[in-house]
Amino acid sequence: MSSLDHSLLALADPTRRAILARLSRGEATVMDLAAPFALTQPAISHHLKVLERAGLIERRREGTRRPCRLRPEGLAPLDAYLAGLRDAMEANYARLDALLAKNDDPPHTGDPA
Amino acid sequence: MSSLDHSLLALADPTRRAILARLSRGEATVMDLAAPFALTQPAISHHLKVLERAGLIERRREGTRRPCRLRPEGLAPLDAYLAGLRDAMEANYARLDALLAKNDDPPHTGDPA
DNA sequence: CGACAATATAGATGTTTACTTATATAAATC
DNA sequence: GATTTATATAAGTAAACATCTATATTGTCG
Image (cartoon, rainbow over all chains, first blue to last red; front, side):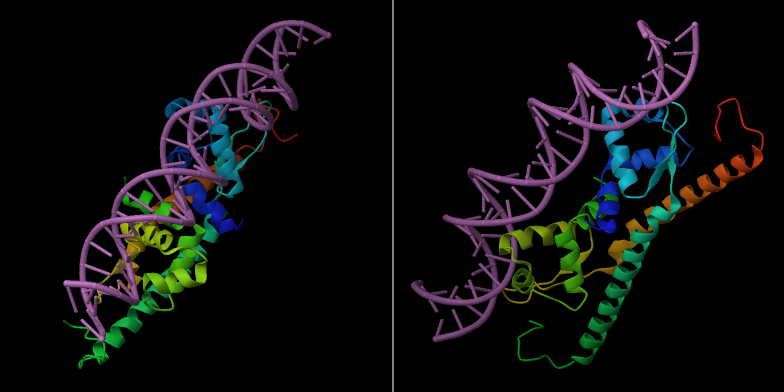
């Protein structure tokens, strides 16, 4: 599974985005995160694993706690993909525009009604 | 459901990203798209509906065909979200860095080994 | 070492999602 | 108007996912 898959799957869940939003206000432990979300601790642990696999967060050990924090580099694969996709979209759009502009006389497919 | 949800859910599926990649080489009909993907036509139709709901593609009528093409504006919600997330991540990171730099003497938690 | 605290893992369950086949709709062509 | 072509919708199924409860792990403190 590609890094892009992991990133997009991680972000596709609203709970995980909420966790990221919470983490953007600073480090938090699993219990910290579980509280505002009306979810059990195992559920949060699982979400954190998904976010970690995606490279969007990282965790350190602090005694029995495992505080998480955001990991900015984790966005790189997504950024790269979106940049490429945007380029492709705009290039394609420009090409279509050019094509449509050229076709003042309709082709053999009875196209413009 | 937010526009962001729709975008991320749409992109989270590899088949749908492959469809976008194919569309970046130009317009295509449902049958055009079904061929290289070893999927049935209804499956593709469903994926196209998801992509359209996300605003990532648009379709026109051409007789009995429904050619699809990419829709660049569709990326705006995602771009906005990612920009905000990146800012939050970097701000948080900078804040942590500052914090760690200030703590040359370790705190009461036996932190740096 | 024993009890407690924070997190992880396992197993089970309900819901969603991707997919299939079969059928319906819509437009073109004869 | 009947047949064919392109797509959409419906109904069913299997796999994936988020979630829970229960339990295991790991580290701290008395």
